[in-house]
Image (cartoon, one colour):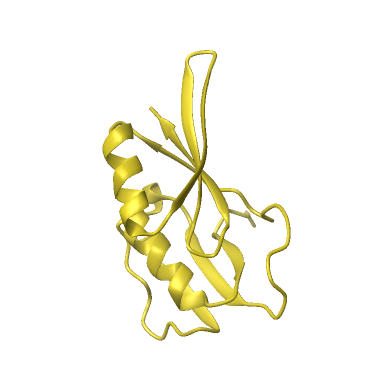
Length: 117
């Protein structure tokens, strides 16, 4: 028997809304049946990473994420603008030791980084 990483689950106030953001950000489909309670963004090809599941929870996000995704792109400036157009909010920009990244919040305030790569 072996264990493998299947996916990641995110708490959400509106699962379908957050799933739509991440589906657009990652150019993936939202699985049929998505609603405010449960939604899944499919990976399709395993080389594109894990599936992402979103589940409605009764409490609001109060502090830091329980999960913080990192994205990497060869088109850093273009992707920053695209994510902003999708509804992300820029929180911080960092250049350190030759690395460059921007921290954003998604449509429900969950932080994630976009790394220049």
